[in-house]
Image (cartoon, rainbow over all chains, first blue to last red; front, top):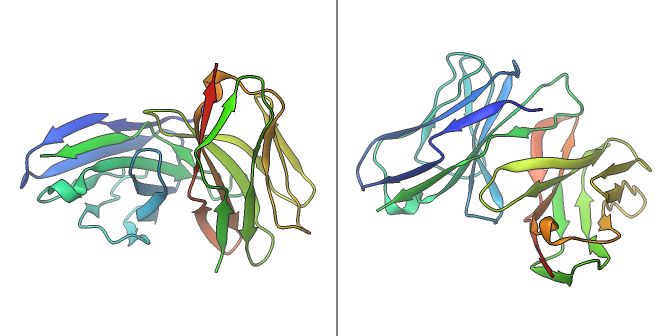
Length: 114
Length: 112
């Protein structure tokens, strides 16, 4: 069973606020990912990391930033939230040594910016 | 580049009906293929996978066979239940890319 956690599950916040979405995994996976998804719609990769101190932007341009100081932790930060950031954010991890890079997902954070 | 195409939804069926959700892919090399499921309000869960041609993945009554000749990985279930209502995503990875390449998702609605 995958152990990947995201907090908060739901967040309603006003425009201009700084927010950090937390993601942690206890599987020791070296690769971690952030996706943005409108509920039930296509997934868009916004950030990924292949290890500590390694971060890259994904296919979808995002105003968010990420950090990877510890293997198990991959937080996502929005310096100034806007209504266009309203979406669901999914964190995932994978192990290069695992079965062909299968990804494990957290439950998601549903963000609403008013 | 690599890509995945799935049938558009929503797909609406009655309980106990037979389900097929089509998925075709374009990839260089020999991809691994996956079906993920997303229940309302949740993250994604791996439903099944196949890592080489002619492999059949199966789980919870769902099946999909890796067909290299038709570049397909169609999801099937013989008798669906209301609890199968969800969004289903087809995806692939290749040895040259650690990332999952995703289809757009197919929403499945099962009516009692």
